[in-house]
Length: 111
Image (tube, rainbow, N blue to C red; front, side):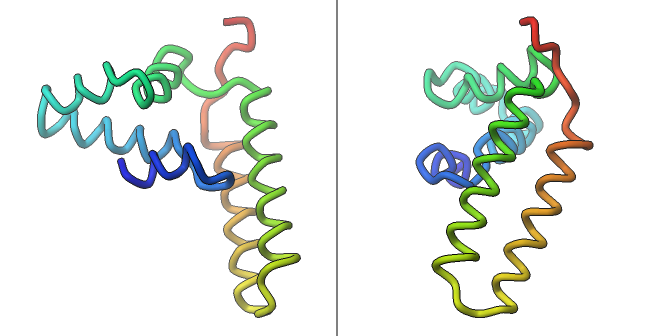
């Protein structure tokens, strides 16, 4: 959950996947913790939006992938000088793009 909260503040770090994982673990372990997360006015919206729409809209995916690649270009292209680290960052970005594009289900754009 902490990584999800940090992801709200740090561009490029995903928020929703960490909060979905937290919700799934809370659901299995404690109804009180799960309900606390869902009812939280700042964190609950990420989980509820995903659950209600059963995925992400095309617009949300494009926005997320674009923001991710902007951060990858800034960090790998401008801030990091080590070629192996740059390659790792770009590879992680490719994996993230494939997951967002093909694994995360598409929700209706009309909701």
